[in-house]
Length: 96
Image (cartoon, helix red, strand yellow):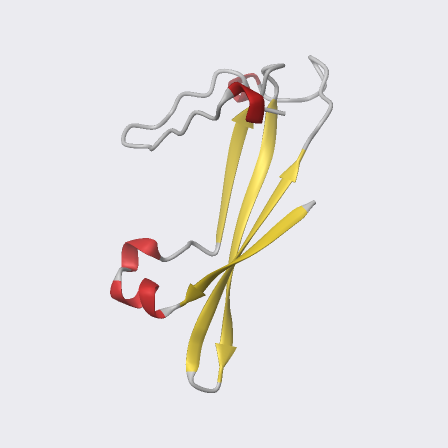
């Protein structure tokens, strides 16, 4: 299921380039059962005659039922956070 959220005027992103969203970002998250879930974030800008106005963020979460030896690469389970990456821990009640 996807969730869409408008981030408002694109002027903020122009004034603060660090706020600009990438076109596509893929994350792997781990939940209570320690199996990875694929999370895809999509960003699209809506064109208007006056220029770019709105930016839409679409979050797609695909939950997979996975069994060991089902073709996942071993490094999927030995993932190491790259240096400089920002990690946000979710409260236990949010992990599904």
